[in-house]
Length: 319
Image 1 (cartoon, rainbow, N blue to C red):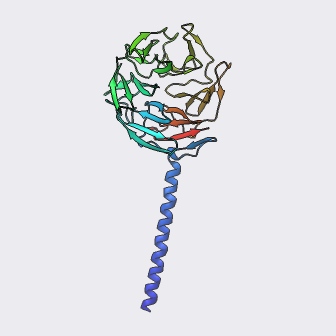
Image 2: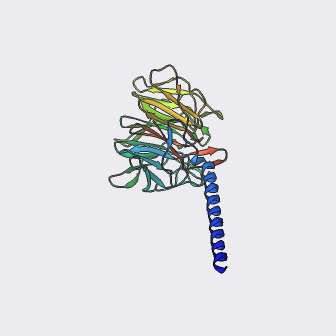
Image 3: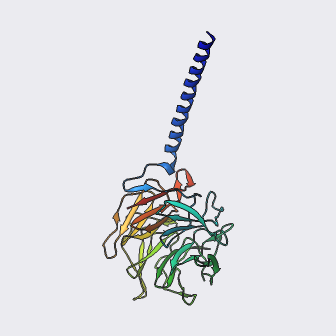
């Protein structure tokens, strides 16, 4: 009789344990599926390994087939970062790289001849800076450069030859038209023709020997404006407008086209075309993200979700 009671207690205990474990698995599954970083990929977009730190308004650059994200902010606007994370697409893995000399966000970040350049931005607590630095992977050290003559943040940057065009951005009094050019060979700054309109939170790229200053914020409103600079003519001209206003978003060149990504928007432009095209949007809605192209894939990195407003480590790729 005692052995039968003991058997019934063991059996009952096993059933209860199994029920608890099953419930835990179900709950965990619900929590994971509800999190934005685990939302289903949309169409040709797929999830990749996430950042270690959710962040937005950071620098993004590709160097030797690796994606670098530099600084940015997380949480409140004054919480600036000095950390650098590097992504290996072949291994789908992130690792930490050499930290920035000081925390910075909203910088213009480009690579020229294997060297990373970080220009302007915000430094703690939230001060507009003209600070310019360069990182050489061969020495693994940051060095100071002559500062950006007009301090600003949320500016666009593009590279033509060995020249870095620092375009527009937010100055102490708001958006500016200023365009200044850094010659990486002589390490000197010079002025270029200003933008036709003042723009902050814009993005810029170079393609086909021309510079494209795309979107941004003017007079307190996001804009569809696109300006194209032709160095041969030394002037700006109006390009085809974006299908929707974009500011503080991701922009890069991928497979011979300019790609612009933010929230559910994904627009592409081929130089010479009369208009932008629409492409499939990301699976997760974000602004302040980084965009990079490596080996035929487009990577949308980090950023901030609109509702709720929070930084995320999400990474999605598109082919």
